[in-house]
Amino acid sequence: MLAARSGVANPFRRRSAGDPGAHPAYTPGVDVERKIEVLAGAAKYDVSCASSGSRRAGEGTGNASVGGICHSWSDDGRCISLLKILFSNHCIYDCAYCANRASNPVPRASFTVDEVVRLTMEFYRRNYIEGLFLSSGVVRSPDHTMEELVRVVERLRVDERFHGYIHLKAIPGASPDLVRRAGLAVDRLSVNIELPSEVSLRRLAPEKSKDDILRPMASIAGGIVESRAERRRHRSAPAYAPAGQSTQLIVGASPEDDRRILDLAHGLYRKFGLKRVYYSAYVPVNPDPLLPPPEGPPDILREHRLYQADWLVRLYGFAPAEIVDDARPNLDRAVDPKTAWALRHPERFPVEVNRADRDTLLRVPGIGFKSAARILATRRFAALRAEDLAPLGIVLRRAHAFLTCGGRRVLPPPPRAVAVDDRQPELFAAGCCP
Image (cartoon, rainbow, N blue to C red; front, side, top):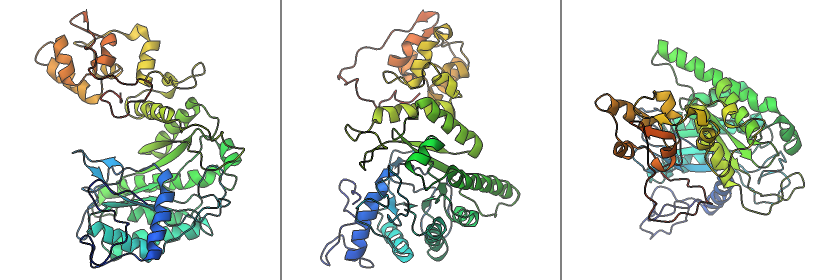
């Protein structure tokens, strides 16, 4: 089952009539509770969740511009919750890496359209969730499954007047008409590309094809462009997937190197205008000779380095070839990608913090968009001193070796008071992002 946040009752626990947390309008039956347990657990492997970019609002229930999605963080630091489930974990496909593959002897369950709609509305009214993330295994056919998913989101929007955030996974191979109907009802659409190459897709998921995955991506991208153009002419025109589209890629189930993965992500951003590519370290769930040995934990460090490199490509103007190339096809595990690039280009450093332009500053490890903007704003009034740098947000433990201030080298910060195990990725440290 999905875990409740600390101090908040578990919304999936069956309540007795005397339970003070019981809701008088709705208590799921045993059968629905079992479905939630199975289908919420089956959805945990999908990491492509985000709620940025949506401004859906109106008269009715919910507001996507205020609410969001589980495992995301709002601007004020709140953790935003999401009902994250599969419509069904029955699947006609037998993808080697998937926990819900047809040959796996796992408990199976399927919701009805009414059950998903009612669960979403009742959990929202109880303040357990602020949105819905809905995906599914492929039942009967891609079109049949997509039709059921579309019925859910259209019921929520039209009948229930629900204006909360909805992220829907489009089914590869579904008809363009169904994908378009979905885009008019949800905030974000996504299609999982799953593997980095067509060769690996044929080997590990032979029932799927590259075209079945890329065709709905192209349809969604076209719908978003058309919708934005139409809304510029007519403000009342319906929005189509206003929060854009994303995808997820499994890292480590196939032999492709980081260069191939970053080239693919860069191409998807340019061709389809994706908001995000999510990387998921391969988790062994099936014994299969086509997959890596199940020993050892998922390679979280590699996943983390790919996210850092993706950030550089997507926002900082780096080309994939600047980060990985023929000589270095995989990212450095010892240091982050921006630091690795800086160490390979000593001719570009040190950078004088009082004279460098914005683009040059953004290439310095430990300087991001906010700190670069603060540097430029402060320089309009006075020259910077070494003691001014840390308060401006510069991460000196990463940046000091690449900067001068007033012609002098910047000294490193004093040692940390608390020892940190450098073998682990500091996912939430101040300097984890470029």
